[in-house]
Length: 209
Image (cartoon, rainbow, N blue to C red; front, side, top):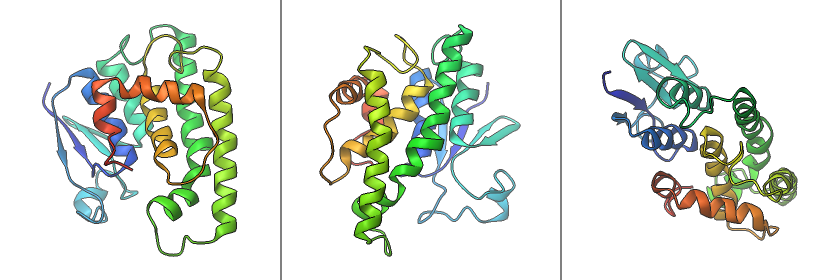
């Protein structure tokens, strides 16, 4: 097996998903710093690998792919079956359920609030839209809190999986957001468990958004 390549900047939450998974699996890889403001991905060289012009891209020999959650599934099935992805079909289904929910329900809710309060992005300063985003985000976090409060160690059961990587980085943003937020004690304990992992602490550091 040749060295895997990851194209993307570490300030991207989606790039950090892939890097965390690679570290959990102990795989050798190199990272190339693509993505604005570092290196514009809207160039032919990059678009040949991902026509969307977005990071991350994973290159594994003569194979390349994009979309961070799909990359997590690929890495887990190719290099971490039974480690980051269960051999049990129902546990795998639960893992995929949370991966889908993270990207389709949780992440869209926090977008405006994060851009306004954390990134201070120009044009994201409407108090009503900030409040609406925080309310939607809180409602999604309530769902996660309710599931974790049932006694789950990790999202798909007692074993850490790729679902926890994706979710961990999303809730890292919740706990890092400079705003008053509802207490989520079960989620807080879960977050601290993830931070207790070497790779989790590395990719959910205080310096990353």
